[in-house]
Length: 107
Image (cartoon, rainbow, N blue to C red; front, top):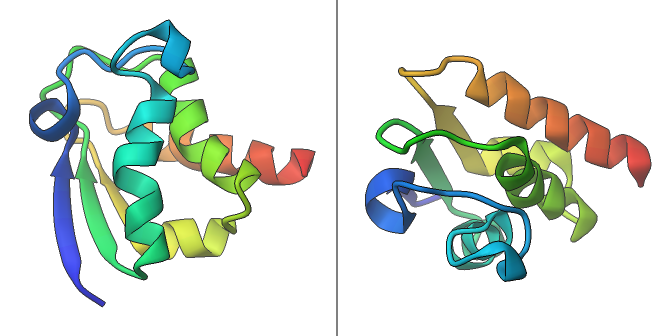
């Protein structure tokens, strides 16, 4: 399994916000489509670095990661594919896992 690093502030935006593409150019949907799905489909691994951005709204995080579950990816596959790293806000990884769990419960 090859490994990459996705630094959201550098590779995507310092201002990630919104859930849908209609919410703006840096939405959770766009991040999921441009970075996450390809990693999962190629059975690769990526460290996702959350530091450096101006913050993360729940709509961005829920759509990016909970949205993967709604597209048919399992929690185990998502957690195998990604390591969530946030030194500035250590609650982000747990928040993401909560959104994944909630999306699985809704299925």
